[in-house]
Image (cartoon, rainbow, N blue to C red):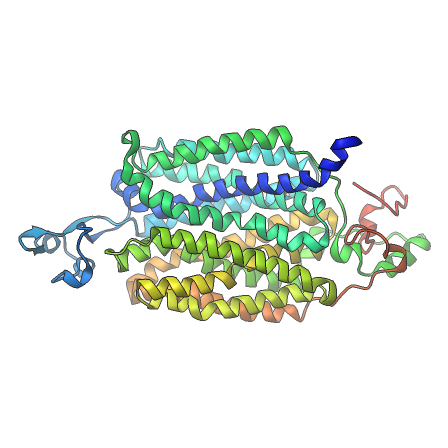
Length: 508
């Protein structure tokens, strides 16, 4: 990529620059994704969608001072008669919830995100990933900008679909690029930092969506949130196009070390092994169970992400938790992401990929009980238990994809990531729509407990079962012991045999 002199010395810094660039782009994409959750109330008031309810409109009052809590009134007429010292303290209006919101937040986004993600995953295995990523970034950035101009509910739905199409390429494309740039002992940490973009964008959405609309800058209210994110995104899109370059594709993990001797003997005997396809890979029981476990865990995270701001506003309307939620999701979540990546990377060299799955199972198990606390307790203890839960819960995403890229062959790596995301997002991204009917049957808090904390616990059990399907530490052949870790395995070397020729040291 760089040749000679100072450029050669800067090569090691370049890969960290790439990590920073694609991570910031991912954060902006996720900010645009989750802004609807924190701006939904004011957006619904402007565009007229979703449910209406009785809500507290006097910020100087606490719930203990109210003769009747606004949220317990189900009639507009009664809501308007509630007074304290001769002054009305409740208002009847759009609360940002309802099936319209759940469709907008989940299925409208996920329907496109998952399908296009698979298509882009296939394209990434065949074409220049950096150029495709540049185009994807530009698409979702423009969609975010245009969201600030919408006049109707369906405009917002359409633009979220366009944004989903662009953002769907971020994970499979960037994962492939980063995997080729970084060695095995840094891989889980690097992918954790990148995938923290989900939680970074989500966390930043709390203060942006809560406080910027109240400023009503230039009379734009909630729209300025999308304009600001879009303008910054245009800069990132330009840098991605101008500075991102395609690295050499490398074999890693089991493909780079496992079954090396078997691969060598096959090559020496001149036998051509059968071609591995995407169907061979995704049909493996360990891939299927890992995907299902990740889907359940993703549902828990998405349920909280789509409902956290609205939930705490609904149950604690007299307490401003915006900055607390930001601090927990971005601050504590960041520490959890790094710790999860470091712990996983430390153990993988001794215990193999199985150790990564063990870290997954234990982290989600520990996170489950405090997750229940975050929806059961009052504001103070809710934030304390949420912080504890977040520290352990957010270890999961980067580790999952470190596992995935290490157990699939190079030739279908990005395609596998795309298919994996397709299933994970269709299940985990769409199941939260059930929160609305379940909440109307048993209560909003109870519905959140089931789909958020309850699904954390279920995923931990499924990750634990997945661990028994994974291989232990790989045994590297003597011929490859002195080569960089994770770059020279021929377990799937038949993928690289073309026209009867054997290329033992191929570098795509």
